[in-house]
Length: 221
Image 1 (cartoon, rainbow, N blue to C red):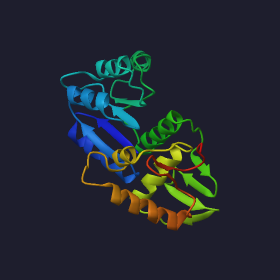
Image 2: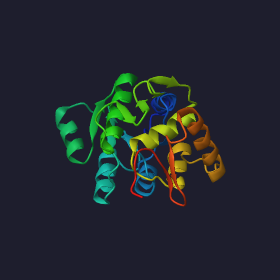
Image 3: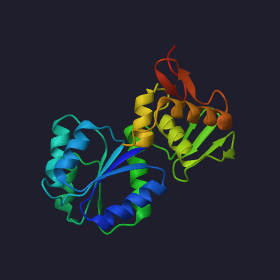
Image 4: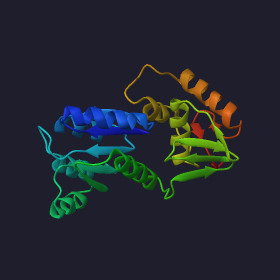
């Protein structure tokens, strides 16, 4: 999953980024409102975590611009502004959730997981596709109830495909959400990653529509 963290406090940004990365997310950061606006308006993210007090452009204006431009990615507002009136304003501006500072990292992760799941139509914390079960809280994958040992990259792949079950995901989209802005990866690396997953989860766990992409679940012929 690919996240954008918009936070101008370098210490908070580093701490939150480390926690999110440790939880299996690909994290990109921005500390300036205008830079964040450009990234959110031109790149695809599974979630944006947005501080309101930013240089160049404040977070509320940023959020309103994204929504006015038809950008529908989930946005979690993360800010020291804690009054109910400001929370209402943020939600009315298009925020999907609001977490005042200071906060516990466990709550941040729980809210992030819930927003990402709901954005693709999943309510429960576990996603089951055939014999494969993905526990998004524990970042664990099992086959017929037997836990599988996956690398962080393998987990990110199966998690992304699981969240987008029954949809063919193009290789370019997978690469963006697996590697973020690291453009050194190529199609061969992705194919090798899928091959390793099939050995661990079963040959039919990840399907291929040649020339279109990969999927988990069922798709139209």
